[in-house]
Length: 93
Image 1 (cartoon, rainbow, N blue to C red):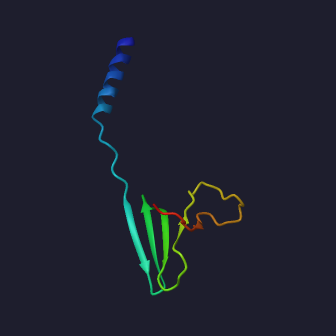
Image 2 (cartoon, rainbow, N blue to C red):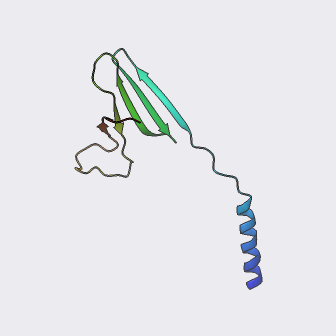
């Protein structure tokens, strides 16, 4: 019994050494724009990770929309599932 367990463990470890690494995630950069704004979206594995809104004609600053994970509850509980929050970046370096 001990010998068969050792052989099984050796076979499993040998198989793990030859396993291929996982494939790279699918990354998409989508851009939608009109004469007022440019919206840039970053998606990884089909899930939106970052949205940046850039104003073209107004002097309003650009802003990002921070996305929540699907399983993450909002603090107030009143916001829609999957909705994000606007964030203005003050310092960039």
